[in-house]
Image 1 (cartoon, one colour):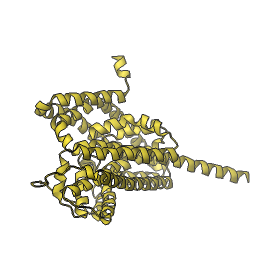
Image 2 (image 1 turned 60 degrees about the horizontal axis):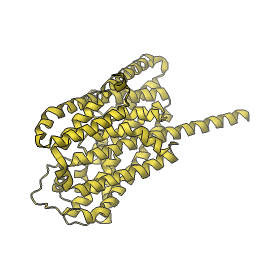
Image 3 (image 1 turned 120 degrees about the vertical axis):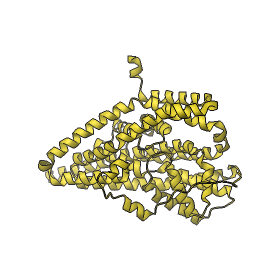
Image 4 (image 1 turned 45 degrees about the horizontal axis):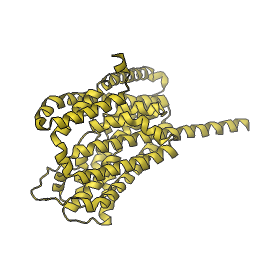
Length: 416
C-alpha cells in the first residue's frame, strides 16, 4: 500500500488513461453501460473540480495581489501576460490555417446534405466586454463566470492593498487562511485524479470508437500535428529565450498537467495540477496565482488552432476556397472570441459558430466536426494549459530580471 502511495501522480494518471482506452474499446458493444455507470463517476470528479475552482481562483488571485503589495507590479504582470497570450493566440490561429491548407488536398469529400446544427447565440465583442464586469456580488460565484470572478478578485485585492496593512489585517489573515484551506481541499480532490481520468476517457472511447474517429482521421491528424507543432516551436522558444528554462525540463515537469488536461478537456479543472507544476519549475507563487487563472479564461491557443483547421475543412467540404481576407477575418475573430471562452468542454463550438458566421460559411458544417469534438477537445486543452504554464514561467523570469536590474541600479546610486 505504501509503495502504491509513492507512485508519482503522473504515472497513476497515465496508467488510468491507458486502462480507460483499453476498457473503452472492449466496451464498444456496451456503450450504454459505460455511459450510464462509468461516466457518472467521472462527472462527480468534474463536479468536485468545478466546486473548488471558483474559490481557488478567487482567493489565490487576492492572495497573490496582497503578497505583492504593489499595484504597479500587478499591472506590470497583467500587461505582460495579456500581451503574451494575444501574441501566441495569433500565432496559433495562423498555424491552424497553414496546417489546414497543407492538409486540404487530403480532406475527405463528405456528403453535406441533411446536416443540422442548432446555432448557439453568439455574443458580440462589446457584449463580452460589458459582461466581464459583474453587477452582483454572488452571481459570478454561483454561475462560475470566471472572467467576473477574476475582476472581483482583482478589485478586492487592490482595495485591501490600498486600505493599508493596519486596517486590512483581519481581511488579509482571513484570505490567507481560506486560501490554505481550499488548497488542501484541492490536494484531496487531486488524489482522485486517476479514477476521474479512467471514468472520463472510457465512455468517450466506448461511444465514439475507431469508426467515427477514423472517418475524420485526416482532420484530426491535421489538428494534432498543428497542436504539437505550436507547442514545440512557440512554447519551447518562449520558455528557452524568455523563461530561462530548458524546454526538455519544461515538458517533463508539465506531463502530469498535460495528461490530466487530455483526459478531462477542462483548462479550468487542470488549474490545481498546473499550479503545482509551475511552482515546481521555479515560477513565483504570487505570479502563478495571478497568471494561470487569467490564462485559463482568456488564453485559448489550442482552440484557435482548432478554429483554423475546422474552418478550412468545412469550407473544403462545401467546395469553397477561402480568400486571404477571409483567413485574416478568421484570425481576428478567433482572437477576440477566445477572450470570453470558458475553460470547459465544448466551448469551442460556440467560437466556431462565430468564426463561420464571420466568413459566411453555413453553420450546418459544424455538424461535420461536432461528433468528434471531444477528440479535438482533448488535444486543444493540452495546448491551452501548456500555453498558460509557459506564460507563467516567462512572466516570472522577466519580473525577476526587472527586480535584479532595479536592485543593481539602487546599489550603483548608493555608491555614487
